[in-house]
Image (cartoon, rainbow, N blue to C red; front, side, top):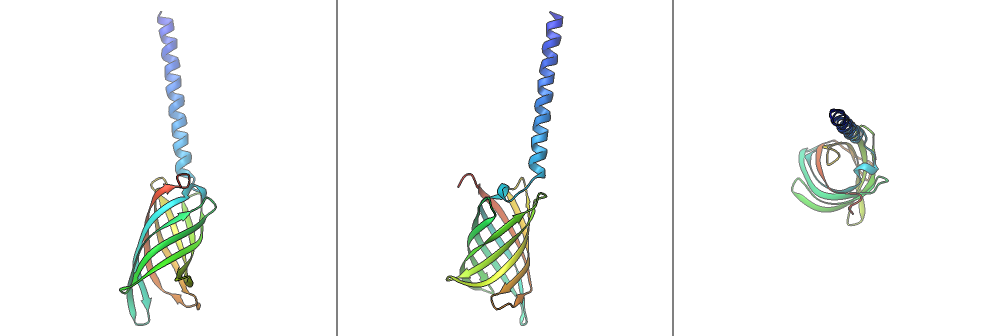
Length: 164
């Protein structure tokens, strides 16, 4: 009887150790890998900051949502205020994501169907790809004028690409 009990205990310990090892491996793999597909879904975001014009600094704020597919294409709707002037905008573009959960978003911003500016935004995904932080690298008006900006973004995943 002692022999059967020892075998049973050994089997239970082996199963527990195997399960713990598999869980750790799965968690490590999940934390170490980001991809364009793994951040697909619907996101909500705000951005705030400053545009630096020749006449001085102007505050900017935006709130919106965007949906990204597994190939990195996205479409957004946002409401923004620049120095108190309100506009509704649509945005399209692409997102590339690196394995370390950093990435780049290239955006085309439209008002009333007309392209008004482009932007390059550097991203980092955290909290198991449920949250993003970002900063504008550049903003360019359609005529080619670069706008000096200091704008940061805070975003939260609303649903995954599989939930849409």
